[in-house]
Image 1 (cartoon, helix red, strand yellow):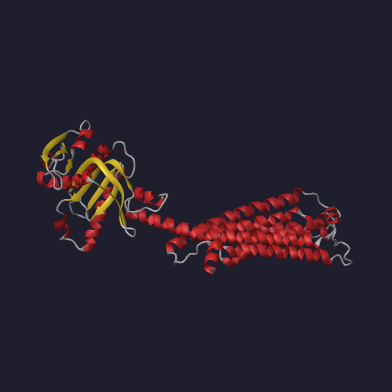
Image 2 (tube, helix red, strand yellow):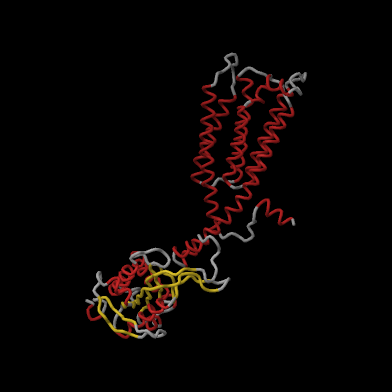
Length: 445
């Protein structure tokens, strides 16, 4: 029961240890908040100094005046804090001192009003400058650290208590204390209940803000952790797939998806088994990394999305995960660019000639798997044909093959050779197969 009440009041707690990179990101955001706080306080102290300078002075008061010295000292302190906030992470003790300095400045200014206007001390209890207390308390909520909000509220209440005590103590005959509300508002009389109301209001505002900070802190921690997880996810799948998963209105379920007319490209490295057996595991990983970096640049250039890695092979989609009205053309351009890259360079000294199979048709795009393990992919008969065409390259000495639907869409931009009409494995209807002119070994210079 207590746990439910706590979760209802304070929000869902952070139960797991946050990874270091998440803690570092939170720390950086806290530092950024402190810089914002420092700028606001720097502007406020300039504002206070300007108000004191233009306000009328009591010429009969001579000698030491605390307000300009207090504002001047606070200006120097705030300037130092502003500079340090950009250079170092401000320690907790310094932040606590800052909170106390803020409230001290405000209380000294309020206390000085009875001197400035030659009135009894009870005069300053009616100063509207007290409202700045709530600004100082609210500013501390920007850090999402509740201790500074509580310290600001507590110091404000303590400061006002001292001011009220001083005003009452100086009235030795207790002639200024009243129970008449009208008299309190129209004279310099002191209504103790009204001053207590101010302290209660300050305390309640502090408690509410502290509660907001605790709830917001937990929410921010969860959000930052999910943001970090989404960033990590985008390194294992394409950013388009990651975006679709993380921005879904509800949690993605097995079978969720849609049918799209898309162009699919399957790639596979020629003779990869022979290449890999001559390398150590570390050498192979380095080589494949160089290869994927180079190939991905071509895929990104023409708007393809790597939907799946299968060892050295890739499944690349166009107009499946993101819209692409020229998906057939971009798929062929990508395949020819991959072929060009692999013809003209090696990877860690190893040649990586790559075969591509292209096919256009209807595909189901979405999540498959179980409730606990999902894979975001494309599947369907036309997807399978693309995989079979990639394998068919081996029989005809080509590196880029495409189905009839792709050919019909690109034949005006790319001259193609008719290769054969083939019944591919897993399908009864023959498939007409084409290859872009120049994609055959015989014609490669």
